[in-house]
Each structure stands twice: as C-alpha cells, then as structure tokens.
Length: 418
Image 1: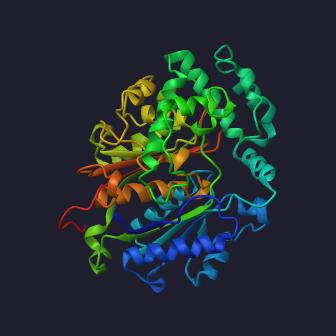
Image 2: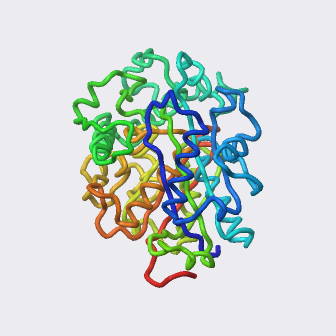
C-alpha cells in the first residue's frame, strides 16, 4: 500500500455528556484534529463517518455523516457512512487509507462519534446491543454461551442488574478460557486494576481513580466471573483523524509529528470450532497487518486492545501474538502489560476505564498510540516507542467477533516522506 500518514488526531473527553449532541461532539473532534494537523476545512477532500446508535435512539438513519458534517461546515466532498459495530471507525480508517492509496485524495478525514446517554432510556440503549449479533438466532446464541464453561464458577451470580448482551458473551468466553487454560478470576481482576491505574494518567478518560485487585474482585457482580469494574461503561464521545498521502506530507508545517499507517488487517467471523483459535478473526487480521508492516508482534513497543471486558484483553494479547496462547492471564498478572513492563497494553486505561464510545473506540485507541509514537503521552509515555499495534473488534457471530481491524502504526522516520 502506498504510504499513508496520520497527520492530525483528536478525541473529546469520554463520559456522560447528556447535554451534548452527535453534532456537537463531531464538531469538537473534527476541528481539534484539523488544528492538530495544521490544516483547514477546505483541505479535506473526502470523509468517513462512523456511528452505531443514532439511528436506534434518534431515528437519524442513512445519512448521519452528511448531516453531522454539514452542521460542522462541510459540504460538497464525498462522505461515506461506515457502520461496523465497535470496529466502525477503524474500518473507516482502513477505507480512507485505501482511498488515498488509490490516488483518489491526498487529505481525508475519519470520524467516530457515539452518544449513549439519553435521559430515562438506559434500557433502550442496552437493547440496542442485541443488534450486534444475529437477531434471528438470539435464543440459540444465548443457550450456546450459557453452555460454555457451565461447570465453572457460581453462575447464579448472572442474575445481576441489566447489562449489555456482550457482557454475557465475554463472561462465557472467560469461563471457557478458565476451564481450558487455568485462567483465574484474580488474573482478570489484575488486568482491570492495571487499566484503572493507567487511566489515572489520562485526562480524557471516563474514570480516573485507581483500583486494587481486591477492590475489583469485591465490586458489584455483573455476570460471573466479571464484576462491574472489569466491564467497559457506556460512554459518550468522539474522535477524529486527518490522513494524508506521502505526496501531501511535505506541505504540512508539523510533518515531523505525522505517524505512518504501517499496516492494516481486516477480518470477519467464519465458521470454525471454538478451540480452533488459530483461525480467530483477530489472529487473521493481525497476521495481515504485521505482514503489510513488515514487522511482527515482538517488534511492538505498545498496544491498545479491545478490552470491552478485562478478560478480552487477555484473549486479544494472545491473538496478537504478544504472549503464547493460553498464557495471557499469567502474563498480565506478572506485570508484563503494565507501563514499564515487557509490552505495555492499554496505557490509555483501556475500554474498561478510559471508556467505550462504540463507533469512536477504534479511533480513540489510535489517538493513544499516536500520542505514544509522537512521545507526547506525558506521565504514561512508553519510553522509546517506535511501533504500536491496535486491535479493535466488534459484534458477535458464531464463535467470535463479527469483525476485527488490526492496525500497526510507526513513528515517523526523520526525512522520510515516501
């Protein structure tokens, strides 16, 4: 793929923003990203817009991107609406890279935005998560999940408060991993405690208070083995990135701060035995991204993975090849994924503490990695970071996520413009 660079990137603070609309969040993220790139609205030649909830909650369908960007002052350029569950904005970024690589633009804008808090409508929002799986097979899917690791742990604790369907997905996968590999609830809690500590250093995170392993274990049960602080919250927020071609890079006043998109892999679910993890969509996407980047998991200095629950981080560090299959829990418990460890993971605080604004999450992950590769991450900086990887999954079909995007980023090399 011809070289593509992230010239500017931004994100809003994540949290509960009842008084802010999709349009407000979009405008804030876009203007900050353009300012970061040193570019103006008129420089943008095409845009990709990602959102998953506005259609369900507000009835704004079909042209969400055109509507939000029109309100932000954009018109005339191609606008593409990209909805791909939690991997929506990273999917938009993959498409924008292909568009630039094909020579169809030199400057492209990618936006992810989600509003998930509406007064008095929490139950509607939680029901919306069911659209991330096959709605015609819900009973079959739920029965299959309940059967996973059926003899592991006090599953009666599943009668907790209303929750996203995906908490049941991850709890089932966690029980299966515990049964097969000996992973413990304490190891899952260690991941959550680590990410809550990381988020204390991130001023844009939804939660910024530390939690010990014991506090995580003692928190409100959601569905065993998951407690509340092991699970990502509902989050409002937006993120935006400005992509440029190698040809356009010399135009930029801040070209040295640009980060190269070294590789992207995209995969979707396929029929396979649950145990055939070598065919997991995240592993296939990672293999493609590493191959494009000419690098491997051992070359990565920092990672952001899709920890919609703390267990998911364990699974995805294995899928990315950052540790051997079945060892992710022990790897995290030994401190290998903490800031200062062998391969820091989710130094942003991850989805469980930084927040999870569904369609924006992919770009939010990349925001962290761009800051790391620019060496602008402050107290949470991974020293000497040069290569970074993000794994962003979404939805559920059969034995795995419906879709997954893995992106490898590289710190801009001095003098390299193509």
